[in-house]
Image (cartoon, rainbow, N blue to C red; front, side, top):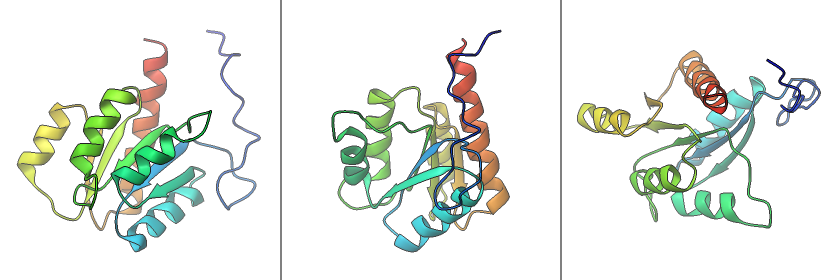
Length: 152
């Protein structure tokens, strides 16, 4: 298969750690600044470009502002947030950006909600505090599944 139309990502750098290859763009949505910072740093160290928002309203605004919408490979969202909460944001993202995988990262685990969200197409459901390796695996799997969808 000739994939010459895919961008060469080996020369791009990620976040604030120069010299690493670009692995994808991640949007992290959480109302806790400390959580956003830890997730951002963890993923940037792994080679991802990360932007964050404090709630669903800010995330939607970020994705849609400007003439050229932001390109994001994975969205990681909390559930309990002010303004537009995670469930409302998920509904919006699935409608407007159906090819972007969604990962839930919550401090309030709920088996029934997790099952419901997985049935609705959420890629993964993680509980805070999340293990670094679990986060890396969830993001890598989400990006891999998205890239496979390009060829389906």
